[in-house]
Length: 442
Ligand code: NAD
Ligand code: G6P
Ligand code: MN
Picture 1 (cartoon, rainbow, N blue to C red):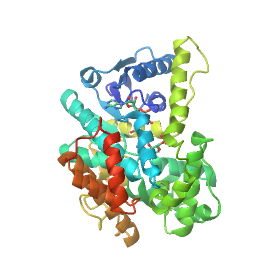
Picture 2: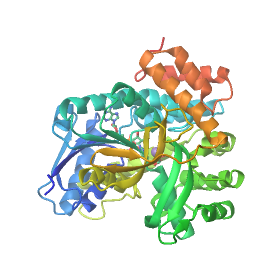
Picture 3: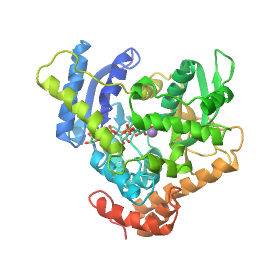
Picture 4: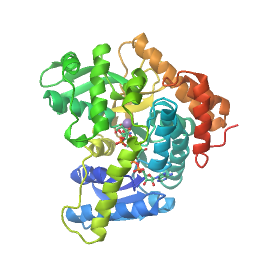
């Protein structure tokens, strides 16, 4: 009988917490639970989430599961088995600046891509390294399953400081792309074995083997993408940003029909189109604050006011299930397959050995076993990736060395940036905007 698990959610107040807890509860047979701990630096948000999670657990009739909301690391992490990490250093207010500062200069302004992603990276590294230190101190045997963005930068930073860390970095985007393709074109994703390579939010499918159809269906999906744009699947229903993002997959595929692209490549291949479609005064951060954040506060408020029915209102698709599948894969040695963000070490044979890449991997009791590609990748993808990897590494250097020069090099090399002059202008504005979060650069 598996020991009942203690799960700590770092960033407990995150709007994604209810979706994750729902998946935990749905998988109680594979993930027996004794305690959920919500850890957050924002007491108000954490307490709101405590109410929502307690409501969910009471609805399920689970009287023996303890819920704790705390701002004290020792209480949050001591003796826990899994840490699900989803912090956002600086919150949506700083995300808004990440998006609007580059946009003001005519460049892509985005949460994880371009210079917004780099500014977020500089904030996020210190937050996540602190979480890792707490876990090392209070629960050294726990596994950290990380969703905190920007994932490639976080992963590079953590592995430099803690090379043997028990941490898995994962992104839900490939699963969301696959789900959207399956819903639009009439497939069952459960039959798929997809192969993919790239960096996080920067990659390509090479093959989608369908076990029922017994063939690679990527060529026919490419034909469909070229002629029939996708509609957002129900978990993103009515969401203009995601609708446009999935439409852009058709633009990319028409022009580069060798592979199915990750939708995030739009920021690197068609930054001009993206900027044209973005409202400078109302970016994604504004939409999320007026949508998910407000909605979460309302759910908590209803519970606080004693409302008993129709309180829960969320749909995060496969996001929660994906991280729960990772946990059960470790716990029960299930050896499921995921796309994971791992040190390259030859998985992509002709890409630098020390890059952080995203490739398929099996997960079991001993951790992650990445799958190596059988062939070298093409020069087009390799060239794009090498530049991006170098830029990310320079940013991580800048963080640890507190080096202005390295930060400027990173900003200049970022592929959404046309020249060093605008890179410097944006860097200098970001330094001021992030003065409470970034190390002081010299
Ligand atoms: P959010 O702002 O709603 O929630 C984040 C929470 O983290 C907040 O409650 C905040 O108070 C807390 N927090 C911030 N700094 C902290 C720290 N140092 N220690 C503890 N708690 C801290 O953000 P969100 O939209 O729910 O996203 C959360 C994170 O998950 C972000 O990093 C986001 O980019 C990431 N995310 C990743 C994926 C993926 O595929 N990898 C998918 C979705 C979201
Ligand atoms: C996808 C990506 C995440 C990203 C999120 C942003 O899930 O994989 O890495 O954080 O989208 O979504 P949002 O609704 O916050 O813009
Ligand atoms: Mn992601």
